[in-house]
Amino acid sequence: MALLSVLTPVLALVLCMVAGFLFLKSRAPQSNLKEGGQGKGPSKSGFRPWVDQDLQDDTILAEGGGDEDEWVENDEEKELAHVPYSPQRYPEEAMLQRSSDFYCLMNQRRSVRFISPEPVPREVINNVILTAGTAPSGAHTEPWTFVVVSDPETKHQIRLIVEEEEEVNYRQRMGDKWVHDLAPLRTNWIKEYLDVAPYLILIFKQAYGILPNGKKKTHYYNEISVSISCGILLAALQNVGLVTVTSTPLNCGPQLRLLLKRPANEKLLMLLPVGYPAADATVPDLKRKHLEDILVAI
Amino acid sequence: MALLSVLTPVLALVLCMVAGFLFLKSRAPQSNLKEGGQGKGPSKSGFRPWVDQDLQDDTILAEGGGDEDEWVENDEEKELAHVPYSPQRYPEEAMLQRSSDFYCLMNQRRSVRFISPEPVPREVINNVILTAGTAPSGAHTEPWTFVVVSDPETKHQIRLIVEEEEEVNYRQRMGDKWVHDLAPLRTNWIKEYLDVAPYLILIFKQAYGILPNGKKKTHYYNEISVSISCGILLAALQNVGLVTVTSTPLNCGPQLRLLLKRPANEKLLMLLPVGYPAADATVPDLKRKHLEDILVAI
Image 1 (cartoon, rainbow over the protein chains, first blue to last red):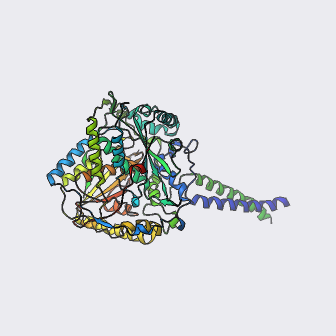
Image 2: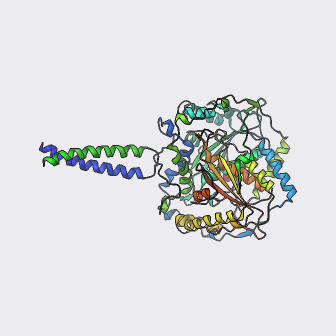
Image 3: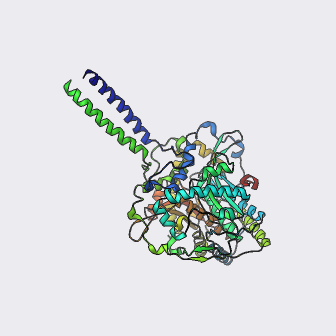
């Protein structure tokens, strides 16, 4: 009884400390996502990787960011000249025609999962990548790397990685709702185009930069910037009659990064197989929204 | 003493329950970000709104997502036909020329902060918006709303909101590092173009959809999808000789959503002032990376 009357206050004190610790922990940002996946068996109702993956990379890096030591110490940048800008101007009639023609061109673009093995001139791909690189980016950081894979063995390795993860995605991680929502598109974990397409373009976002002195450089809005760049890339592909599908292979990023020997500051954002469409290519008969459904005029 | 020997075990039990509760809470996703801002005085080293804002909207909604009741119950979708797809094909020489011409066009695009008040034909803007709407999106959800403002009073209200928040951003929230990194671009919180430009295009992402029966529809990868759409929009603007600057007005989203009477599922992603460049427009003399800096060929 005496022992109990001593131990119980001690236990109460220990529990106070535990409760205090957990309370403080629950107020801190979550940064315990490990590279390599979402962890085992996440509950399906809480599984939203299109948000979590946005966060996954940057959160880990945030822990080390923000010190004075990591500033971009470059006085030359501050003296950047500002120069006149006077781009091409078109008469109104030409603007109407050009805007209409470009809309027609882009409205023909579809995501295509059946790609021909026929080779595509490398220079065309280079021009497409250069075009993507004209995108705006936060503080002009240009936080993108385009890995263009044509080597058959590497493409096959990519396919093995993606299909293995996608099968788990479809069978387990995505959950019934997501699989259901994709049903009209008739997708599954078999991605034959990864072997067949002449090029695979893997778009990596640079979550931060590395300066010559080894210090980190902040890449503001890097995911939005790289996604904007992807939009311009898609326009460039459509412009030359090439097709692709904009895929975001869930949980494949780290393995692909290692396979392609990309550094730790790069995270896979999208994988685009590129080529001519297969002769028997099909697409789901989807319709796009009308102007009044997407535009609000004030 | 007798009272103490009764109360202390009770206290221990209560503390166990509190500790257990906090432990479970610390394992759940964080969803305590309020609409309206990041909270008061965030530490500058932890302030990364380009990540937090990605999360901010969707996390709040996650709490209510995932129930069976909210499925897209639409059997018609499952029976969507798949149709042959055979787009325009160009000879290799034409592909080379087209890809080179499009690169030249897009390489002339710059972010321009000095816009002329000269009117722009509405139909051109409509075509540009339609073109943006041809972007791919997660599960074809098309999670975008383009609010096109030409009313001078509304533009002025937008300017007041943006400048007020931007002044706080520049003076406090962004921190010295971010302000330093922007110095070469000579930006500040004065945004004259918001009054002057004939159109302001505010791009809202729909964090989730609302079905006719009032239930929620998941919008997979909505932020990436809308950003891709923005890239296509920028290409469409460049194609007709119009200029813009791709701005992400920090902390202005909720106020602008209310001003423009957008529903709660819509969150402001980007604000683009659109028009012809001012006669004396200037741009910072920035250079773009070369092909070998952005492309890795395997």
